[in-house]
Image (cartoon, rainbow, N blue to C red):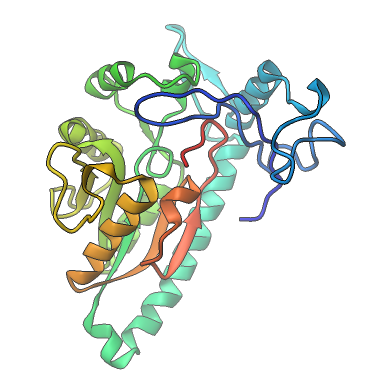
Length: 276
């Protein structure tokens, strides 16, 4: 969906990913540029003065407002189902369902094309499961050990509107695949969470692809050196080679969507971090 973005230049490096905390404030929240003229742009990524850099604490406050932050008695944070974020992602999911309904009608009338089985591909973090509570717990500063402990002990909420969409498309005979940058050793925790979040679809190894750096699959030419785009597009290519036609690919990062092998690209909002 088109939207204006406000980008923060805070960059934190980690072994897993380079992250930018508070990189985007969506149009649903901002409507207009938040920090006025002189904002650093893609053409001028290095700011000429402090006036071109969004104030980090203010950006965090706006992110919390966008998610309709709910703080529990034990200090955990959750997104409100009445928040602007919730409204936006529900709208995206609803529009995607309408598009998929039309795609399925065309697929059924597609002659030789309908020999391929219809499928969709979804990312996990902030596409099907919401990391908001985890991100606030770690202060947007990714740490692998912290993520492992969180995934082992805590279940994330589903992204608003996505369980309804995924379960609907599954009932229509569409095969659902999850392709995530989470690690292979995190599989059991992730499967448990997806099930508890209400996704009533197969989440076995044939339908759930995680990044296996120790034993990368042979269909990935880049092996254990794959970046996000190579891993995800290479996996989608592999899925299509198994006789599927990917009608839509869902992700909260543009790197989830690049590289082809999908009829539609559906971008979900995520102002909390950036994955190249």
